[in-house]
Amino acid sequence: MISFPLIVGHRGAALLAPENTVAAFRAGAAAGAAWVELDVRLAADGLVVFHDATLDRTTGRSGTVRSMTVEALTAVAVAGPGSPAAGTANIPSLEEALREIRALGIGVNVELKSDDEEPAALVEQVVRTVDTAWPAGSGPLVYSSFSRETVWALREAAPDRPRGLIASRLPTDWRTVAGDLGCVSLHLGWRHLAEEQVAQVRDAGYAVAVWTVNERAMAERLRRWGADSIITDDPGLMAGLD
Image (cartoon, rainbow, N blue to C red):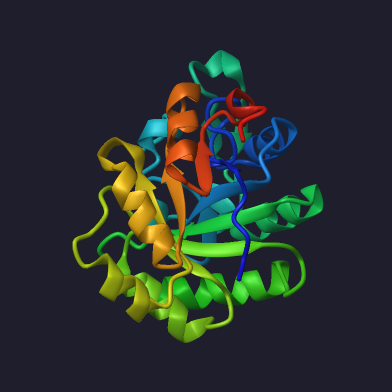
């Protein structure tokens, strides 16, 4: 059974550096995150680490990730948090990101962004890349997705890698779904989470990771409730949390 860490840096450390970039993974590790979370998407010919389906929000460019090559995307700069003055860093490929995180000596939560597309192609390429860049024994790695179809495909393609289901609210059918998908964890939004739900999920044998928590007082409350992991944009805010 994989052990979930107390602090996971969301998109690396999205309040400290351009999200989902090598700079953000380094910032997350430096700020005390034991793991970082990243988002992976299909490009036209491979995989990149990027949250949105389009470039607009973080790069000031237009276009969809799916329509561009990895080479073109990795030449695109992501703006830093707050303003362009915070710096930029380029979009990384999944392989580049995993190799950097592995070198940092921390764990990783790989979130698969399949949107409404058939997840088979995404899952196949992600699993192949992870097996190359993050071989067994490299350190903790967990797959996750909002898409039940994607988590199911991960169960089929990589049965030995742990996986979690992400949801904004705890689904009413979570017991059945988590069991069928072979999950080790549920990754839940803090806004709609109740103390008794955390207890129920943990009593059923699943870890509870809560996102995206950027207030110390809320993190402390969630820990009192029994949450295993706090996923945050600024791991430094959680220093000393127990």
